[in-house]
Image (cartoon, rainbow, N blue to C red; front, side, top):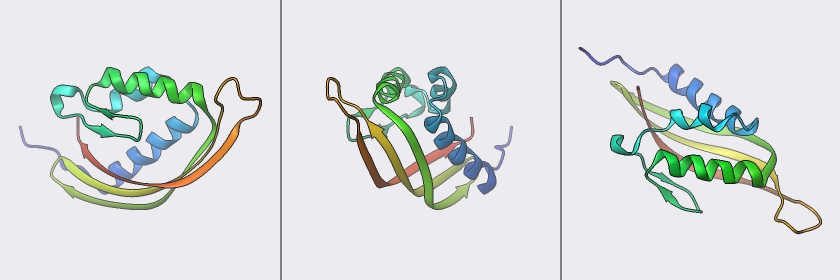
Length: 123
């Protein structure tokens, strides 16, 4: 069976949907299937950890959902290179959020640009 070409529009929609899901704290079981399984080469590098298992990602996502709120991700740059059923994505996303570290009496605002590189593969 021939591979189905991954289009730039599909990848753009995927990236946009990914950040929308994070902003609204979509159910973990809705977001987790969007990342590869460990035997498919999953590797996600975050300041907190490098993840290679989907269950580890689910745990980190749960931590984020309980710590970060009023999140807004704004895509500032998006460069997509497709080849067959794969795409390399370079992006810059501005992330605005509030964070609360118990038992602090007030939340704290954070905002920054995050530069990321993704490999997207048609599943």
